[in-house]
Image 1 (tube, protein in one colour):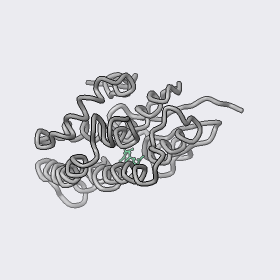
Image 2: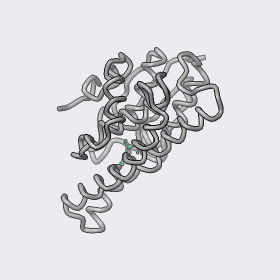
Image 3: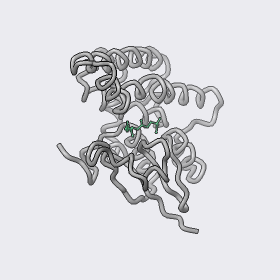
Length: 217
Ligand SMILES: N[C@@H](CCC(=O)N[C@@H](CS)C(=O)NCC(=O)O)C(=O)O
């Protein structure tokens, strides 16, 4: 059995960033395989990459020569093959809270700022750069204000109490993206407090975009 892990990733991709945090947190070594989302018309559209992920998106994790896409599926898979340290709580309700936060970001925010979506707005709906940025900020603010309200109830040092969970793997990359799109995140003090705590943890440091081999300032 080939037990090696390969992660197809782009340094700026928030969905890839989630998986990088999970891999580092679980101390799983992996080969980093960069997919440049813009160069060469977008390397995610290459025939070779589409064989791994027909949706033409990163991340994609290869384990035992088998591909898995969708960061949620990948992180749950990592939890199954490497239980400790756990990223999902044992109790049913707390686990649901973790997935609730992950999905709020995964389904409710990130898809609306994704490259292919915003490129379509520009190309076929004549959005100006300003309109595109307003669109991205609108959906980030709508989602993040809900996240902030939920976290006021569930958070300790991290999203759910004082233990790192998959919810933190989703939140920190989303805040990285929000800042990149000039969203005013100072409105979200609970989120910022969690980001500060995560910033002290090695797994989050190692997963940061600027630490990746394909990073470009
Ligand atoms: N729900 C997917 C989202 C994946 C996704 O949207 N990836 C983006 C980068 S963060 C991508 O590859 N975009 C390429 C494109 O839009 O062409 C996941 O969690 O893995």
